[in-house]
Length: 147
Image (cartoon, rainbow, N blue to C red; front, side):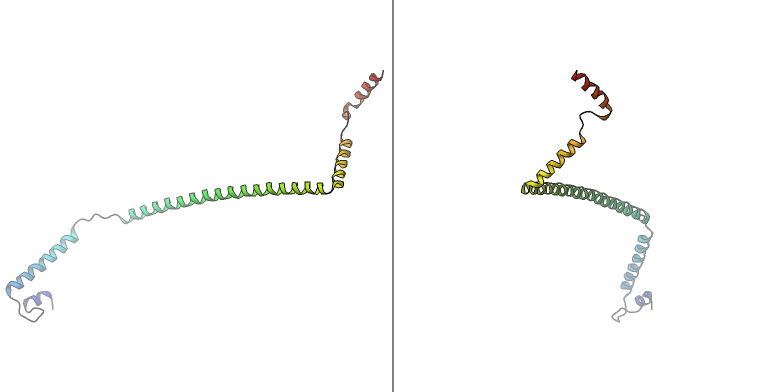
């Protein structure tokens, strides 16, 4: 049973409709259909789907770029900090080793004396009064001085 048939005969409660009510319902129905057609046929201003995707891609690209730059900078700062700490550890360990060596030398004067004797021997063996290329000249000069 269609809407037209329902309006011609009886209402939902089972009563017969009056001609004025029947006319009012038909006009309401026609106005609803006219409004629907007008709403469906009017021009719409909507953003194209491709443009919306392009905007999101651009925003996502900038966001990812920002994250990558921040990560690179923080990684560089962290690595620099690690290198500074390593250098400080090396310097501190060198100071500790030097301090331990000096403390050991002070505790054992015999080792210190042996080290000094060894360094003096090496110095006397390595050092020369005159370089080897100049030795003949030095001998001639030594002869002149004695005369």
